[in-house]
Image 1 (cartoon, rainbow, N blue to C red):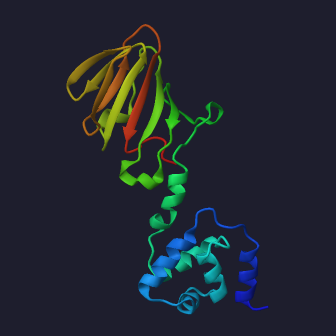
Image 2 (cartoon, rainbow, N blue to C red; image 1 turned 180 degrees about the vertical axis):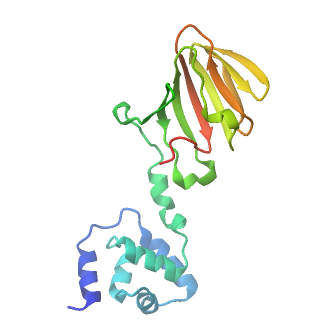
Length: 204
């Protein structure tokens, strides 16, 4: 059995593609004026395999898909946009929530940044600051914007040389470029919901 036949046999055993890459591959091939044979030769696979992929009969292995995308000059974002539309909601279970502790301040992740959003990726977390403690990450400023909602307690937002007193129920939004910190000035813990774009902490 040749290498191409072996690869084709392997791909035939895979399940049918739920993302229908074939429709887009076929359109791209026809726009370029390529025959199935030309694409197969350039991609190093069999002509019958390309035909089956175009008809969504098999789900291509990732290396095969990458080769076809390169031959047809297709952007991978274009290929996977349907998959992204089919997964519009991301759920983070309480038991799976990631947590970062930074000098006694606790960050509990609520929304994970989507890497496909690039510079528009955002993160959201529940911020818990003990009595008398201060956040540190923004003390030198960073790119982006932030939105915060005080859930419990009192604090000061020290933004550049201005102090804003915030209490339960207050919200705030600002450019992250300027130095900024939160100081828990209340008699108990401070809890706040925070949204940052682009993501700064939960980026992995």
